[in-house]
Length: 252
Image 1 (cartoon, helix red, strand yellow):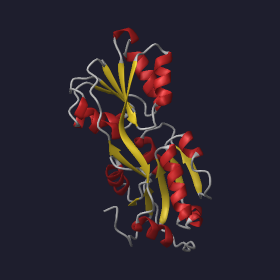
Image 2 (cartoon, one colour):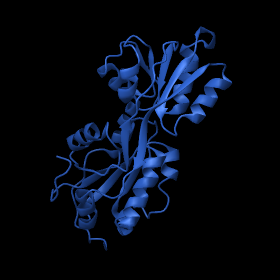
Image 3 (cartoon, helix red, strand yellow):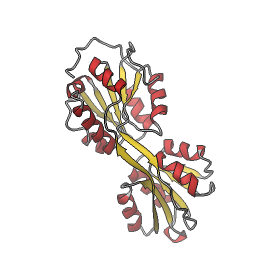
């Protein structure tokens, strides 16, 4: 599906890594676009020590769920950053899951509203090198925080061939960006491939203002930011695919 080339439909570049990229591609295809996977990051679960004293877990990414599920009982309350991460937690067997509004700020507000600091420590399961600001904010609100690295993220070393081919052909009309780090990495990959000129035909869609700032450096044909930091809003911004108009191929 997402790896085929030569599609007569306009292409949408999906820079989100797995887990989640394939599910996003299916939704993009349902809107009439040709989804092209170009994950800018590679995520790998890390072994995570149990935290039996934790009274709840805060999860800022679905990528943390495999390690969390391996280390924690299914009855542990899970506060997920958004609905997508909440669905992943339920699919992994957790039975008490609630969702925040899609970003770290809403997750902090969600935890503050639902949990009492005096009731015990909270487990923050995040990526290696992520989550420090959220941990500090929780501490400032009186929570005891058990910090665990649940996955590692590394930048991709190059564009997948189908993504490069689509950019060279000039068929990419939109691109989805989900995090500041993956957005910055995607910009670097496109520039390193010598395909920066392709951005002039692409409408970049960012999950948040911070993601949009990371897209500086390429001459995008348009740049729009989701009004809410969740995938449903981002895909609503993408909308149905338009007819594919002829476009000159960028120099590659």
